[in-house]
Length: 564
Image 1 (cartoon, rainbow, N blue to C red):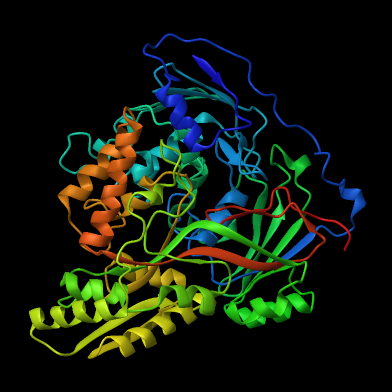
Image 2: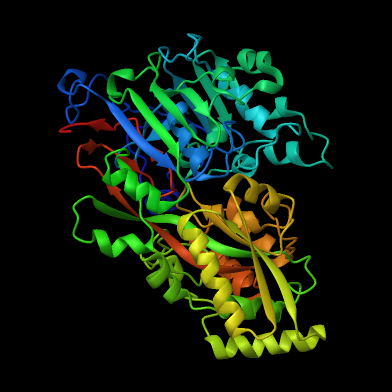
């Protein structure tokens, strides 16, 4: 077996090269090499707690926490909470590299199909119970059980029997005990994969791979995860209190194995949906960080507190193909092309977001010839307003109508609210006979309506935890858990599903994924890409080690206050 260095997991593009050059070998023979030493004690770039009197961080969130169940997360706020309340086998550090979490190290067989994780023996739950390999087995099996199926269950598809367990027509349906994961002993976890996946370790960042204590969870019954007292934690922080729709408080977890590297003692969150209120709170010193919407970007230009980050996050309009109007491809294409995406990004968002005519983000994936994934097909449906009007009229003629009324489901907060209003005004002006009614909902309610497909058009988004196109493209598979549009395409499914498991010819794999994206957007127009998100925010200079990840989550493990 090859012993892996957990401190640094190289970028996906390099992993692909390693896969091509026989990183996993052709046999199951094993060998060993030394692993990178674990991190212990206080890091040199952080002060001791005695250097600063008050290690309190004050933040705000645009929405309530939708869920505290690790296997149910589909939004950024819940994801951020899980990242700080729990810990999986590995976690990303300040430089977005994987470092040891509950796993001290791991071994992988030469064929890349068997991972053996060695867990630390000093990891505790917040109630003092030992964190063991059994907690991982229980959580992973629970994520696939029909009664508690995770919306991210597809992330486990590479594990032996995961697909079969989810298939109602398979004899293994619901038999989670057959999943290719087992506890060799309390501190050894073995995972069997169907195929070697170069980025498997990166997928373990998803919250459904976090452990859960079976005895505690079962003891809570239906109350589990509804309130702080119905949870235990194994991460850097615990949820100390939670006033729904108002705010919540995190406290440092004294039982966390690496508590010596956690300097922040308290994190106060206030729910603030209005950006201007957040800015006022920042200026008054009530919060230490605030996101900025377009009207504030120019105001703070040149301010050293202003920071920005382009993210691995895409926003797009979902089309519900069950709608009698949106079932027409020309109507969908007209809507996709009927508004000015560049103007929306530059004049409405003004935060560095990029107008998007694609689903796979720019500069996320480098293909085998060294070019960007976007280079093959470039932009889709970028033909201008006049062409959109031609498609619109053609669609109206095919439908035998001159009027179309649609509902546009959107968010009720900040910039996303403004973008939805801009799109409504643009489309109603450019597409004669269209009436677009905006239905603004809090994030949790919006997601529920999408999941039940109770919408016509939806302002939607997706963020990726791994730098691979399949994470974005799998949400549109015919049998995927996020196919909230009734989209069915055998051609699309074939290309994406092959790419999920076949890494033998990397050049062909990327070509297939590029062609699948073309089918999705240019041919079938299942979505209307809006923008690749960037985040502009203000951060107090005394807040150090504040980690913003490309998948729109925040890690507070290394944050501390200095110089306040």
